[in-house]
Length: 283
Image (cartoon, rainbow, N blue to C red; front, side, top):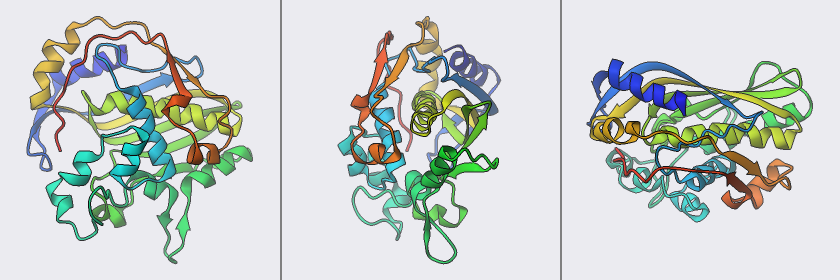
């Protein structure tokens, strides 16, 4: 929580106003932010100064792991965050690659599970990395990237959290996650949860003890229509102690996540939080 609060205050006190071309809304912006999450000691980075729908965040990560490309698929998991980008994003609605209502295109998990190679075949990046880790292989390139420059126009949104690098050190598994753009009031509350869960899950199915997540953000911003709620409401609240996360121990392999795992397999213990704040979502 201290990292999150410090980042919000830094943006407010040191940020510059930038007009975002996609949303047509000004953002108070800084460049470069680094956060760490202690997975080994189960310090679950769930925001306490407002209520967070953590099950939706978990469901979204499950959808990415499964390679989903439809808002309906995410909806069926209990996650509604892709509705606007699928069906209200004007540039995507007129995009010839869009395949009708709810289609998201070749976003996130589609790239992670089905990257198109030069010969027309597909590479399952996630499965390759998990198999390497199971085999004890760390060639300093255990990387999953959702950012495919050759197919940017084929998705409704350029991936924000775009690359995850796994590393083995002293029999522990670490994760470094890179994010090009971060809506701090809304997106970061999900991103923190998802980074933590990604390391915890992959460590569990590859039989490693998890270490830390290093979360690197390039462009961190607060939209103009979010600023007063952050400055005058959320930052006035005192945070509660962090909660703990319990993952169903029956999750033992990638196929489990693909076939039956849901947000109900993740239990959050001792989550205390302040009231809900409804931040505007800028499409």
